[in-house]
Every structure is written in C-alpha cells, then in structure tokens.
Length: 426
Image 1 (cartoon, helix red, strand yellow):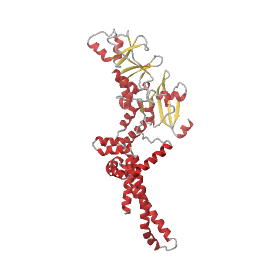
Image 2 (cartoon, one colour):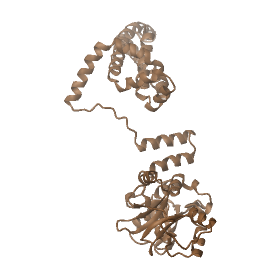
Image 3 (cartoon, one colour):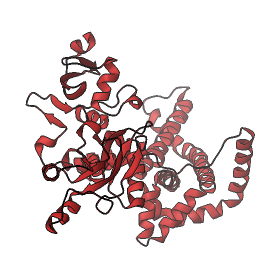
Image 4 (cartoon, helix red, strand yellow):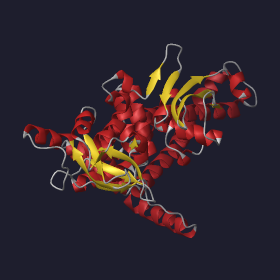
C-alpha cells in the first residue's frame, strides 16, 4: 500500500513540474509536428487552476494517508528492532519518531525530490506523455477543485491580485536563450553575435552605422569628367549637391555612370534624368526604422540630416548589413574596426559601436550609454573634454587610451586590461 501511495505522489509531483516548466515554443513545435497532446498541454497551461487544485488535493490526501498508514504499519517493526539494544520507558516514543522520520524520508526522496528533478530534464516530453491520465484525474476531482478555486479567486479579488499569465518574451530572455544555445554548441559563436546584432537594430541610431560627413564623397552639378572618373573608382553611390554638401538634390549610382560610359554619353551634364531621388532621413531614426523606410521606398541609400537640416552623413543598406555581420562582414583585415595585438590588447577605431566594444573586452555595461554610441563618444563623455593623444580612462579594470586624433576626431583607441592596483589608482 505504501508503495502505491509513494508512486501516486511521485506521479503528481512529476506532472506539476512538467506542466509548469513546459515551454510554449517547444509545445507549439510538437503540435505543428502533429502531436495533438501538445495542444492539450497548452490548453491546460492556459487554465491551470483546476489542475493545480486537483494536484494539491491528491498530494495532501496521499501525504496524510501515507503518514497514518506508514507510521502505524512500521512502528511495530522499529520498536522490535530498537528493543534489541534498548528496552526502556521511551521505547514507544523512539519507535514512533523513527517510523515517522522514515516515512517522511521516503516521501521526500521518492515522491517529491526525484520526480521533480526528472521532470526538469524534459518537461515538454513528460507533459505530453502524461496529459491524458492527468485530464482524467482532474475530472474526478472536479467538485472539490470547483470549491477550492472559487475560494482562492475570492481571496485574490479581496487582495487585488492579478492572476493573468504573462506570456510575452523580452529581449533579455531571447538573448539568454541564444547565449545558452551557444554554450551548448547548438549555435556557433558568430551566429550568436549575428542574432544579438539583429536585435540591437531596434536601439541603435543611424549615426552609429553611417559614413560621417567628413568622409562623404559627393558630386556637384559642375563636376568634371576626370573628377567623376576618379571618384567612381573607390565608391558606388554619391550624393549630388548644388554647390555645398548641405544642399543635396539627389544621388547617383555608379551603375548609372557606367551605363553612360558604355553608351558613350557625356558625364559633364548631370540632370534630372541621371540623378535619382534621394531618401532624406533624420539622425534620430533607429536602424530598424531605417530598414522599414528602405523597404517602403525600395531605396538602399539615404542621406542623414540633423535638426538644423545639415548633412550628418550617408548610410546604405550594406552599412546596416555590416552592422549585423560585425567584423565577419568585412572581407579585408585592414577594414576591421577592432584588431587584437599579440600582447592581448586591442586597437579600436573611434567609430566602433559600444556594443561591439563591450563584447570584445568583456564588459557587461558602460556608464550612461544613452549619451553616446561609439568608442569615441564614450571617451569624450568620460573625459568631459575634447580628447588629445595619451588621454586615458580606466573602467572596470580596462584602460582606454587615445592613440590618434585627427582634427578633434578620435581615430584610434588602445584598450587593455590592467591589474587591479592600477585600476584602483586610475
């Protein structure tokens, strides 16, 4: 009888953890594969009050019954064993305590601890396997569960407790799942970075991926043929400006120029027929919002302006893709924004996004990240001035030192881990 009670309690403990731990995503995959039991498990999770009420009824009833039967059945045996070494006035009490502890130990081990640990290994598979007998058990306990659930709901309403289950998934949860997949070998390290970079598009502004104003190569309406030939050798898209760079009237794709060359047309006359309409965007857009605009306009090139209508930079669809791909997106080593040296330190370009910097040097967060987006912005924010060569910042055991400055622009930063003593001194 005791064995049956232990098995019954173990079954209920197993199902409790299995249904609570079964993940909705995996259950959906099982359902899509044709397993109808997965749909029943999801339905039970949505209305779990009846199951947990029935489970608690069963567990408590078994525990009480097991204590009564087990203690009464085992106490004579314990008394007989103990009497061999002790036959005093406390023999009955010692026999009672021994049988009680033994029954408690058996129930904890075989009816609680072991079933729950088993259920945590594969909750979805176990939940699907036991759903049918569980539904039968719930129907048998329905009268009692109805009473208990109504009493519980009444108490929750009195204390204004919201019992709606939250099934939304946050970025942190997805990131943790991706990291766990990488650690388990399901995802490669670079695939983990790709996925994380895709989600970062929602928070990163276009300024973090665009070509800055100082690096823009543009054409004017009076551009000479020789100048155009030189520029198309190094770039593929050019904003066309009326005099100054802040008066953008469109853009030209290198392919259009090559077509004119092949057709032996003159390059001197840039007119409406050869200039494409350019997409003008504010610098406050995120990369995700820009992707939507590219999709809607069917364009792949945009000019970024600030609130004063001054051109801040240009950005292409390829720039966004390189942001997702990270360093793997660059075909040439010299194009890498981050290069690790033999001594373990890093040379980091000032325009490198802070997310890539954190991943590289192993820092979880930087102070006040809303105020900057690049390594150069981090240095300017921390130093509270326009940096010059040899200026440095030490944060969380990592030293950031300015190596090269070009017209107040930070070109390169040396980053290395420093001993704790040096870090505290800095």
